Image 1 (cartoon, one colour):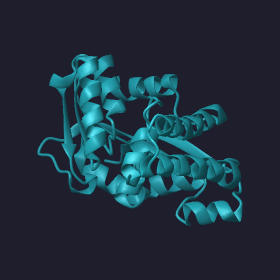
Image 2 (cartoon, rainbow, N blue to C red):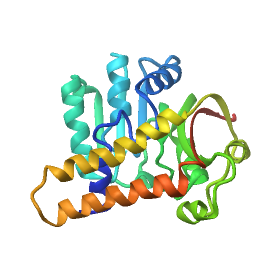
Image 3 (spheres, rainbow, N blue to C red):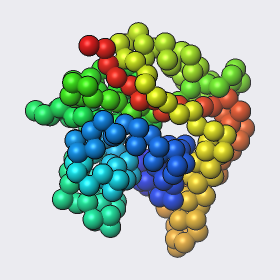
Image 4 (cartoon, rainbow, N blue to C red):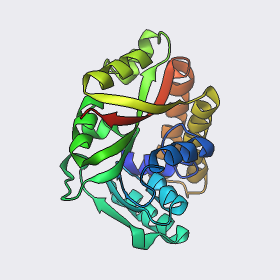
Length: 246
C-alpha cells in the first residue's frame, strides 16, 4: 500500500480531508459561494471531491472542476457525485495540481490542506491567482503552530510551519486579503485525528491476514502515537476566504 492509498482509506469516514465539521464546511462554502451561486468552482487537490460535490448539492446552478494526482480518490469522487446526482456538473482531472491550466478562470477556487502538493503556502497562493476570475475568492486551509510547540513536534513537521500571525503575515505579503475565516476547534481537530486512525484501523481489521492489513494497522498506530505525543498540544488549522489585491 502506498501513502496515497492509506490516506484515501483514512479519510473515508470524515466530512472532508481536513479538521472541519460538517457545519463548518457548510458555513464556509455558503460564505464563498454567495457571490457566485451559479458560477464555476475549482478544487485544487480535491481528493475524493468532498468539497465540490457538497457545493454542487447546495447550489443547483453551480459547475465544478476537481484536480488531484490520486486516481483512486478521483474514482471515489465520481461515485460520490453520482450518488449526489451532480455528475453532469462536475469534471474531475487526474494531474499534478501545479500543471493545471484553464482558458476560463473560476469564480471560486479551493485548496484546503493541500499546500504540500504545491511545496508550500506561497506557491499555493501563486498558483491560485491566475486561475481566479476578477472578483473571485480563494478558500485556503493551512496548518499552523498554536502556541509554542515542543522541539520534537517541529522536527516532525519541519521548519516551514509558523504560527497563526505568521500565516496571515505571509498571505498579506503575497498580496491577498482575508475576508472570512474559521479556526478549527479542539473538538474538530481531535475528531479528525480519531477518524483518520479509526477508519484505517477499521478497514484493516476487515482484511485477511497479510501485508496490507499489517501495514494499515501499523500506520494507524504510528499516526495515533505521533498525534498524542508529538503535536496534539501545538497544532492548529485555519481556513481562510481570501481575495487578491487588484
